[in-house]
Image 1 (cartoon, helix red, strand yellow):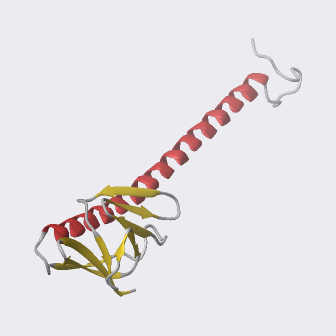
Image 2 (tube, rainbow, N blue to C red; image 1 turned 135 degrees about the horizontal axis):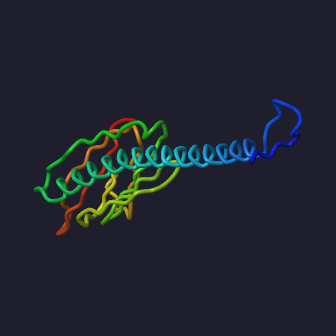
Image 3 (cartoon, one colour; image 1 turned 180 degrees about the vertical axis):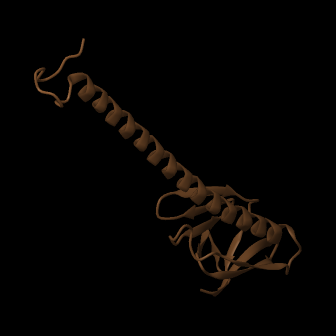
Length: 153
């Protein structure tokens, strides 16, 4: 038995058609929102992967300089951006933190003493995206340090 809004007029939309059309619209909206949120997650994971690769490379470089003999140095160049956004890396004595527009990631390093290019001991040192740095293992007194020197932007 078919229910119609106006049973005596031909071509008028039936109630069951309106109901099925509304259900179809709801399903499409739910699927589109699900797809959109998953695409956002994929972009976020791609960005985090790129940031993670930068941090891993920096960690390896700092650990390598720290563990080698006095005078060993390594030049590092940071990418200009991650997914179109600039970033900074803050180097502490036992970890690195990469900050970008949306989030921050952390990576652990072997504990090091930090010296700036002016020779002062620092609690942390900031590395800017798009810049090149020279990391050198230096000794002062009985302590060894990793000296960070910015070469160019």
